[in-house]
Image (cartoon, rainbow, N blue to C red; front, side):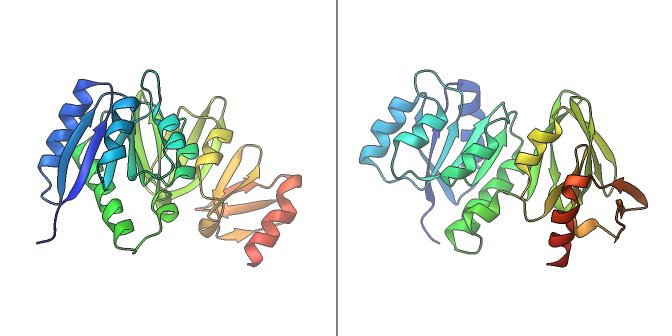
Length: 232
């Protein structure tokens, strides 16, 4: 059996340490070697010890998780842990493997670990491993929506209606914020109020597209780009 991967937890919340440490102990492929409660402790440890995987909180005093990633020139594979989703897009610029929203549930933790080992084995590029789903707030709770299930998004004031294959969600996010979280190669805004999954478009007309019997308008400024992208 191969040696377990060395992990560290960097978080200012003791409760988060308790949860993550418990999850790590249940996985024989992982070994928890250090627990730090701020960025300074993490930097001191990483300076002298090899680490394979870091669970890093974003909102910490003195040095935030994002600042820590900027300061350390070479850092371990990183899974961010936080109660907020607004830094998700920026975090991917630093090769972050995954983004876990608190409270962290065990099945979601295991999925993040699978992504870590996939990148370690060279099966998946890091940038590809972080765009399979989007996490949004619905009825006060964060939920994860698989992108291959998303048909289109419809603006609804400061909310967005997410139409998926199985059901529709009313998410607490704006259309512009959602657009930043979606991979450009798979999704496109076709109107000020609509973002569509390009591979879910069934038919097109000069003024609308059809997805699951729904006619969605095409804004004048988006017509040429949509036409070009559908030809590819």
